[in-house]
Image (cartoon, rainbow, N blue to C red; front, side, top):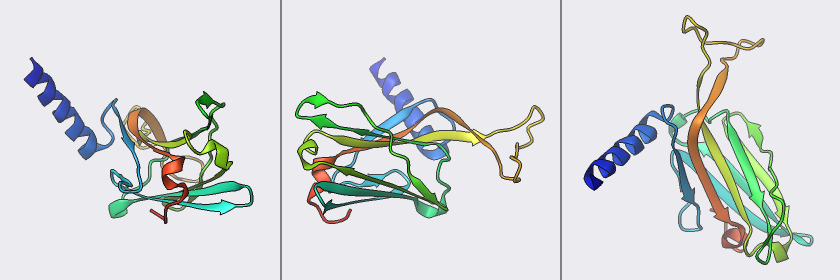
Length: 164
């Protein structure tokens, strides 16, 4: 039974990685200075001191000419020691096929704090005849699906590192 479970899990994983739009599974991956690979996304994480804070810029660009998901979600989880502070959403700027997150954090909060972004799965919204729906400007409409890719990193890992 264990082998069957492994084969089914592997098959589901391959389907998700290849189809990208046909699954209810969320894959999670930690980014580190030595590992910023994020599936078919190119991720750059930069950090520098600014006044009495640390400034972070996270840039996400799809690799291989793919389209970014229209559904990205992010969260900045701050900790003072081991005490969690309220999590904050971070709104990206979207320039064409590139997302950029910018935020600043006080140095005393860096040790246990994390940033995560989720790339949600999606599909083209269609009418009952299967025709793609369009908005008032003629752009194809998309709808979110359950599942996707979640990437996260500890702020302290990138606080004193060169750009990755």
